Image 1 (cartoon, one colour):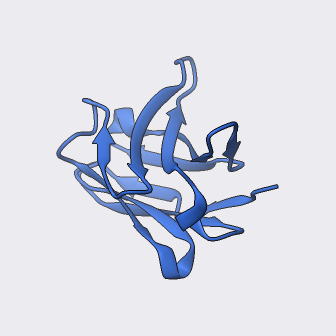
Image 2 (cartoon, rainbow, N blue to C red; image 1 turned 30 degrees about the vertical axis):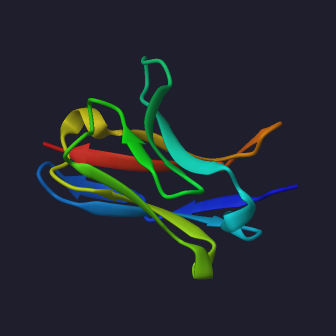
Length: 115
């Protein structure tokens, strides 16, 4: 079973930047796609970004132009670089790894944007 561990969350001021990491327990080259969802209190789960095995990326309109998803196969890690953070970006962020028949999820990591 694939394990995903997020890191890099915490408190940041509006307008600041933060990079989330998602470390996988196996080579991410074998994963169809990796990405991120987020969920804020009182809101529905929102898809944020995805990067495919082939390197294609897609973003939610709410983060496009501000967030960048990437991966480092040598480190078995995907990243979410978050720039120009807004208070509405405050949420628990969940990494996922997408296989053909299943998806695996990290435990989530909190990002708090102040002011």
